[in-house]
Structure formats: structure tokens, C-alpha cells
Length: 75
Image (cartoon, rainbow, N blue to C red; front, top):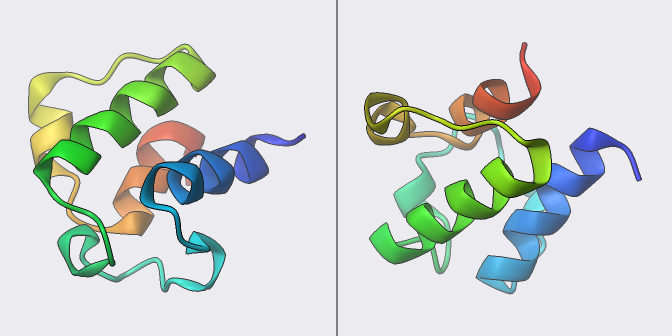
């Protein structure tokens, strides 16, 4: 499975929705099921999957699906 598939699969499994059709510019807290607890769970799981640790500031600044994707997969 490639990194992008892992990214989307991780989020979809936590939120229990198909995240692949959600626009990248959408605010994460407007996505069904995405609340502050889900935000932490998603970031923690992605950190484990991609062996990358975000700083507290990076976690706080993530406000869109696209920003989250850039944080873990690059541009």
C-alpha cells in the first residue's frame, strides 16, 4: 500500500467515513466525526504509520485535510 493510501485509510478508519472524496481545502472540523479527540487520534496514528513526530505547534496549525496531508506526505 502506498503512503497516500495509508494516509486516507488511517483517517477513514478513525472517522468511519470514506475520506477520499473530501476536498483537501475543507476545514477538518467540518468533516463528519472530526472533533478535537479525533484530531489527536488521527495525528497520533499518522505519526506512528509514517514514523514522523509533529510539534505541538504543527498539530495546532493543521486546519485542513490538505495541511494534514502536506505535514505527513509533503507537497
